Image 1 (cartoon, rainbow, N blue to C red):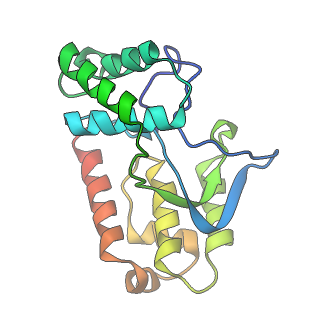
Image 2: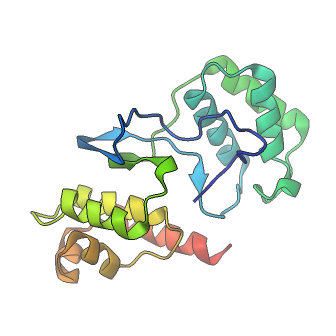
Length: 199
């Protein structure tokens, strides 16, 4: 997963929900917590609505950001030549959208909840993350939240997700995963796997 806004150009901007790790490699929550992220696979922004959602999340994560920087960042990401968007949106349209976001400052829709959050800068190997998820979430009664947690972490790898992978992480059989997976999670996996094909 890569940040939407390049760190070389925008180094001091939060692009993910902030948590205190107190020296730990990961955090575990009994109840899922809201998790905003501006990291994604190579899929490009394909609508103005998606661009505005990114703006809402950016401002939510960085409430003290100056207006000019906020505008500059959304103009940058909306320019097709930067490789983040499938089309370039006009400066007037982006400015109007930025003004609306800036003035309303509403809480963005939360599309991710997490029980396990790994320290982003530790570069923990995938195998270790999967081992931790298996220990913390698995080896007990499997439920849809456990499956969702595994799917969320597997999405960070930018590789297609399968029932076999989920079962391996949770140390259960394919049949157990199939019995507990919800239609919503299946849709998330299908959409994610499809987004990898259209890179």
